[in-house]
Length: 153
Image (cartoon, rainbow, N blue to C red; front, side, top):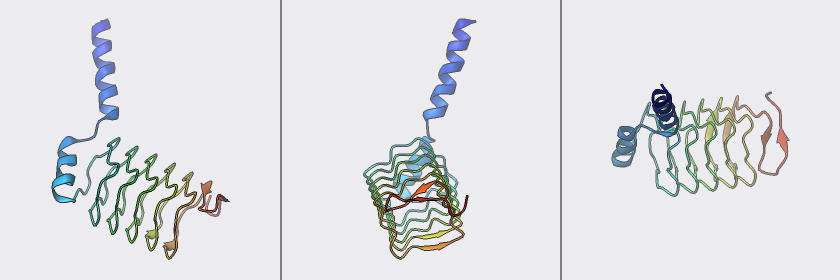
């Protein structure tokens, strides 16, 4: 009985921290990964310029210092992800979920964010110059200047 519980706990733990390796291989080889599961993946310091992540689960992913220029991130789940110092210039973030995301010092210039959810996100020091916003949700969001924005709570 104890062994069965130990094995069940091990399976649950491993599934909670693992991403789909086939999805990771697809992303690395093609820069296209729609509807993929890359949750908890370490994608830091990588070049994903113009990659297609549409409708992908990137919850808890580490994209620290990665380049995502012109990337397609529409309908993507990025909750609890680390995008500190990431470059997302001219990316599409329409309908993306970025709750509790670290975007400190990220480059978000000319990003399109229509109905993007930044609840509890940290944008301290981020550059959002020229970003196109419509219906964007800022709720307990730390803005680039350090102010808290609760406009859409």
